[in-house]
Image 1: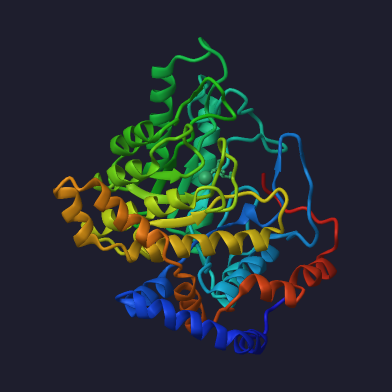
Image 2: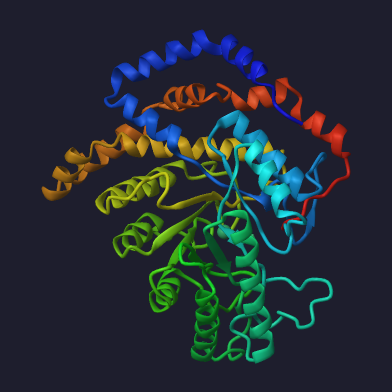
Length: 424
Ligand code: PSV
Ligand code: MN
């Protein structure tokens, strides 16, 4: 289904007066409103193809209705999101779930929907039907050369699919590791993984990057071969200038200081990929900003400060993506909420008075520094985000629009109530 532009216009018309009142109020109290709005208009958060269906846990999966049945329908869903928020203009594919049958047709559908192809993901954490060798004991780390070879070839094939579609990065997330002490020689596992990654790295086109994503635990519970940012940084430093670390917010041990992690990775010029989600206990994959919005703001504060220090373009020089699951929500509503939370945190971080914060830090004014950050965090700037969306042609209140237009009901009518999208 397609969202009609005039439906968005009449929705916006009905909310305009109220929006204008809120916008005028907040704009009168902050500086650089126009600069912030332009940055928000330029910002884009990629949507992963595997987040368009209802996610599950190892205990079960309760599918919703009208889930996308094919790559084409996944693109349509992201096109819907983008039409509503104008900030989700790219999709991240996961191979083998999303192998295109016809590159030209998929590229032209994406272009019609205003979408680009973000980083492409390999999958050596599951065994596929008819796959000759199993990844039960790891893929790129495996003690068996033939298994490592199979995993390397898979990644090279993923790069080829991505190159056909116009992707510019490969994301490698490995579930490799061990479940029990003594199972693995850590050094050999590292070495095997590094050598495998070196072969994959050699197959990257000149203008590509590879993102090495780390995860503290799960599915392996004793050790993960890329378990934290230090290990990822070791791999990416040894691999070379096209290799970067990817930070997924859910992939840390409890209470990790993620804002410090991103600050140091940026300082080293080694941060290039980012996966957003939120969590209470571990890798919960919850809606961005739903549990710890202050932490999200603090992370963005470091991202903006660190990117500015290196002269980086906020919109282009980092691969921003959501990586969440939606066990009990409509996936599209959940994704709209996540993107909104990201835009709010980004806008707030642009409003931090850097000069004042620097001065507080340089004079050890601890209370003063906290005042600056919390004053910004507690300013309700949602109308600024809505204004950016309005100017780009999105819906002022996208979730309300989604419900008013009965979008899920229409998708269910088209696709059926028992459809299950590929993913986790
Ligand atoms: C692993 O939990 C992860 O976050 C990685 O980004 C994967 O690519 C993604 O989930 C889905 O496979
Ligand atoms: Mn991730």
